[in-house]
Length: 104
Image (cartoon, rainbow, N blue to C red; front, side, top):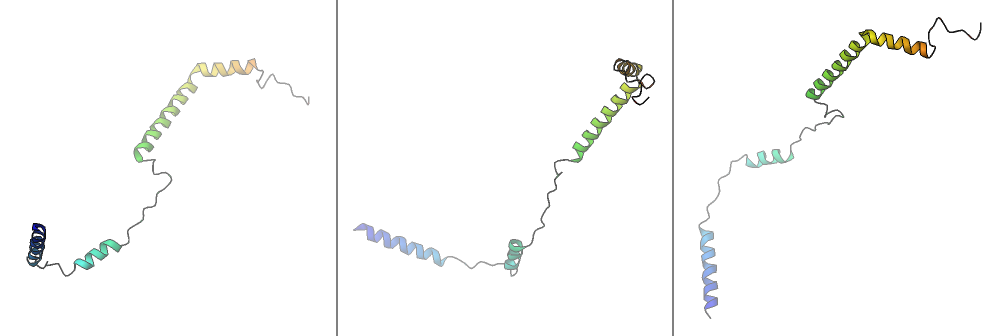
């Protein structure tokens, strides 16, 4: 029958602890600040369709397009290009002077 004495002692020790609890001092505006944080309206961010197209990617794309254009202009100014086009035109009879009109 030692158990009931132990239980009664534990209960008494628990109640003694409750007597040592002091009142907590809280700021008078604690509730207001907490309610504002909980229920404040937050700005909604609108995601655009091109959010992945960052300025770094835009710059890289611009550089690639410029390089392709410079390469294309360089290839067009070579004399081989003009000779190849002339050869292609004569091979397929696309020259303006040689073509006969069907209505003549």
